[in-house]
Structures are given as structure tokens and as C-alpha cells.
Image 1 (cartoon, helix red, strand yellow):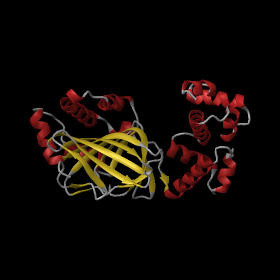
Image 2: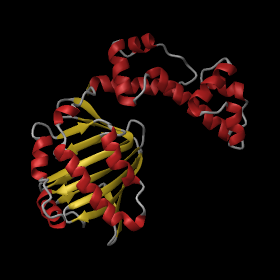
Image 3: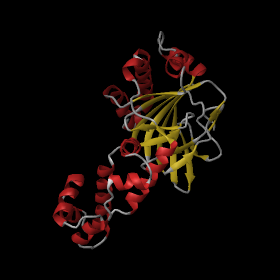
Image 4: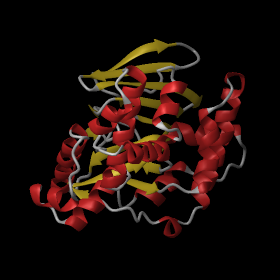
Length: 318
């Protein structure tokens, strides 16, 4: 990698564009592909847009220098196995402050996609550049790193309005003002993190043991591969030898919805695909996703997608 010395993204990340404006990297495997678009904002400060359409990937990211990284998830979710044997997650709206130790690991995207951004600081160079460009700037990156990463490799602030305010506009910046807008936003974000009281943002979202998550993924595979079947929670709990409470809590933690709500969304999305791509009659489509009553199917479809099946098909020219 040319823009960041002492950082190795690994052999599975390929540079496909490199110019004075930005660098673009690509990662591919049998589950899909991802793209990282990187901008140098200050010396030692890099902003990347991360767009992945894949189920999982192996990170070979290593660094021989002192770094701090801030990650924001816009859409999707990242799953990683922590050193304590539990899975942890970065979900839509979350912010993570990370020292990048142990980042060379396997990552999973439970929704098969992830979109967000990261801001990487090479602390020594970045501290100098930030203070040169803003005389008297009070934030010290090493102190910030010690504040958030002294007792753990990362600190996650779950989705709150103040974070959304800082990051939302970074995804729609007009090209002609990017260079200056990135600088303003980085200063704003650092001031926010420096002033924030950690005790007000405790991570209350549960972590899950690997054995639990593996069972939940098996349950997910079963219910999404047989959308015509209605599995009861007791049936799934018994079949996969997991308590009802743990199953419901872990499934929602991994996939963001209850089993019932998630299955309903999957059914309606599958039905929408069939309405768009086939001439199959609506009653047969309803049956294929587990509804014997066309009227109940129509009500559920409208609840999820905002249209009745007939309206949706006509709207899509089916």
C-alpha cells in the first residue's frame, strides 16, 4: 500500500486504483467482494469508505506503528470473535474506537452486506498535522486512545443521535468540497470524543458465546431455506438444544429482529422477487412462502413493503 506506510492490508487486498485523489482496494472470495475507497485528509489521517457485499472475509490487516481507528457502520453489521471466545457486533449507527490490535482475524457479515466508513490515525504524524492546521487544537490522539482503549482493544458507542449528526453527511459530500469538508468533520468528531463521558455510553448490548452463535446460524439456515414451513420456537429450541430465552435473545442480537419478524421479512422479500420475475399467480406465491390464506398474505406483504401484492406487481410491470 502506498499511502499508509507501516500498514499491511494483507495479500488478499488488491489495489485497483491509485492517484493523487484517492486509492481504491478490492477484496474477493467465494462469498462475494468488497471495496475500500481511501482518501488522505491530513498527513497521517486517512478516511475510507467500506462497501462489502459478501458473507465473510479474512482480515490480514497488521500495523507496525501506533494507530487509532474510528469505525462507523451505516448499514449492515460486522461480526467478529473476540479473544474471550464471545462474538461482538458493530451494527447500523454504531461507532467503534479501536486500536487495531488483533485485527488480523475472520469477519462475518450476517446480512451479507456492510457499508460504513473508517478514519485511521497514525498517531505521531496525525497529532502534528492536526495541530499545524488548527493552532491550539486541544485533542491529543494518544490521550484519546488511552481513554477508550486502555482496558480493551475497542470501545463501542451504540447508535445515538449525536453520532448520526456527525457522520450522516459524510456519505453524501459533493465532490468539489470533499477535501475541506473531511477536515472539518474530523475535527468535530475528535472534539466530540474528547468531551464525551464514557460512563454515559456503556455498551449494554449483549455478547454471545461462539457455541450459541453457531446454533443461531444453523437455525437461520433452516428457517430461510424453508420459507413455506412454520417452525415453532419450541420446535427450534428443542431441535438445536438451546433454551428459548437464549435462542430469542441471541437471534435478535445477531440478526436484529425476532425470529418471527425476521422470517416474515424474508418471506415477503422472496414473494416480491417472485412477483417481479415470474407470472406465477399470487395464491401460489403466497403458498410458497407459507401462507394458505391469500388475504393474510396480502396484509402481511403490505405491512412489510407498503403495497399489496397486486399493486407491487403492477408497479414493477409484472
